[in-house]
Length: 161
Image (cartoon, rainbow, N blue to C red; front, top):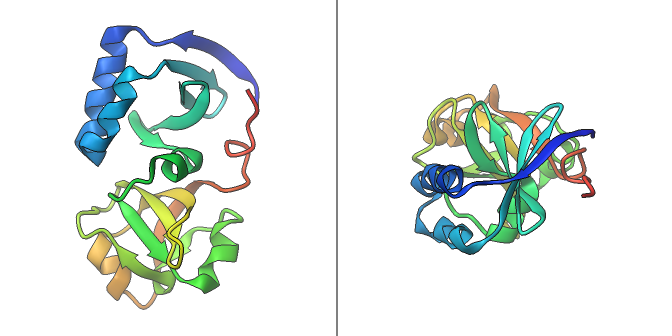
């Protein structure tokens, strides 16, 4: 992945970004206020480095944790858990089918970005875009529930800075 630019965020840009992410995930994200945030522009994404680690990225104008960010920050909102049978497919970038979903945050709306975790240890596997509401994902017997955006082992996960 080729880096087009890398800049440290100014205070006003940082505060706006923090407000956006705190509104999504709550006050646990306020700890980012004391960290150094840098924005890296890549061909596909804009990444936000938190103390040098790629923990956040910009998708469709919204800031969201990368898989590594979700893992490090231990987030509990916008989470969808999948069964053991789905892990192999999700880890290879497959979209998430409704029958594999065992649990979903009830506040998830279609179009929201979500963190996909495995049900046993709740480790993040991927970040995706919800194609249906949270409760509907759990109840549905067929259909695609989430479009995968980035996953464990992809270019973003393996990125070296």
